[in-house]
Amino acid sequence: MVGIVVVAHSRMLAEGVAELARAMGVGKAVVEPAGGDSEGGLGTSVELVERALELAQEGDGVVLLADLGSSVLTAKLVIDEAEGDVVLADAPLVEGAVAAASMAATGADLGAVVGAAESAYDHRKS
View 1 (tube, helix red, strand yellow):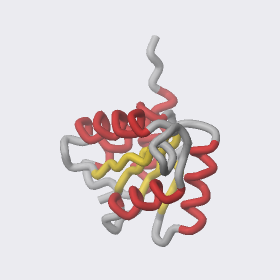
View 2 (tube, one colour):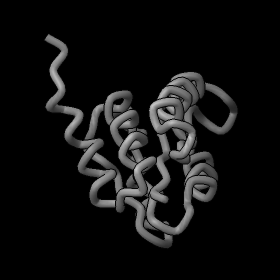
View 3 (cartoon, helix red, strand yellow):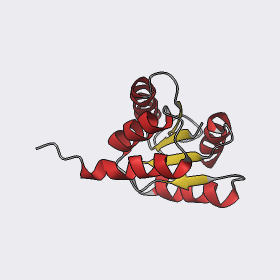
View 4 (cartoon, one colour):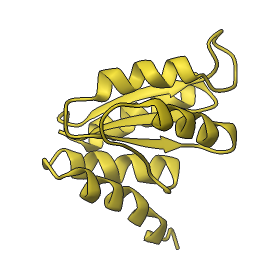
């Protein structure tokens, strides 16, 4: 199954998005949070993202979703060093994580999970 990692500047934000995405993935999708810096404050941490990536990796690839700015840079740094298929989705954090988890829960491949996350931009709220 394709795994998902939520990269955010806040530990609580990453955990909340991961919790929602897991619920929408009907308990099948593996969604790991990687939020905040290594001391628990706001920021990003390569080490936390790498740890979450290891937990999310089940052999079919991992999709990273990032909130903004340095979390995108951190995700890209991790991807450069990662083994296996790891992709940063160009998607809104919450909607993208939910769409990715829903698709991953069906057993879809990496491309389909990334596509689902990125299609979340098309879902308008009005």
